[in-house]
Length: 265
Image 1 (cartoon, helix red, strand yellow):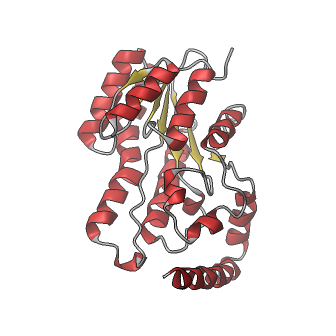
Image 2 (cartoon, one colour):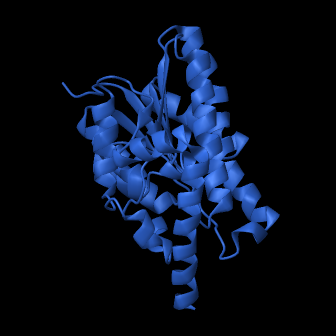
């Protein structure tokens, strides 16, 4: 018996990276899996790999979320676990001057996709009395902030904040909510991070499979924060204990990153 035996699991952004790893591990734990991704080809490939169902499409739009949840319900009978994993980063070198269109795209995918999915799923879970599990792939940037990435940090903070609100509102009504907050993970997003790549890999850049393992391990106690890099807990505590000191340290670190960036030009 696996930890997800017989459960109907939806994973968004599952064509590659962390999403693919979550889908593969969920299937290994006995789940029946729906694979969602904007890229229909990669969604189909992962679905074939895990013996699941591919439902490609835009999981950030209201219509896309409704189509995904309805299609997944038809395929699975019921959605028991929803892994809101899809996320994007359109960070530019001058983060403060990031255009409104890029801010809007990141807000839609990194925040509103979660809101719209919960808006659709939670009433169903409450109505049938069987509850469900809502899992947000956020980031350590949602707990700490990421140097040079205003929109990414802001939207990931918002993703964690929404997950917290969802847990405190519905956590005693059968809805388990979790937020996965890794640091560097060996994905295309890390490869595109430029001088930040070494910073994000300071506590070891993990394989996506290690993130999926950390999530499955968390099912034993249903903890809210899933920290594949356990060091993040200490950083998060230090930030809360003395925010000004933490900000001072981050400014010094930012100066080092600025120097690396200038040297790379």
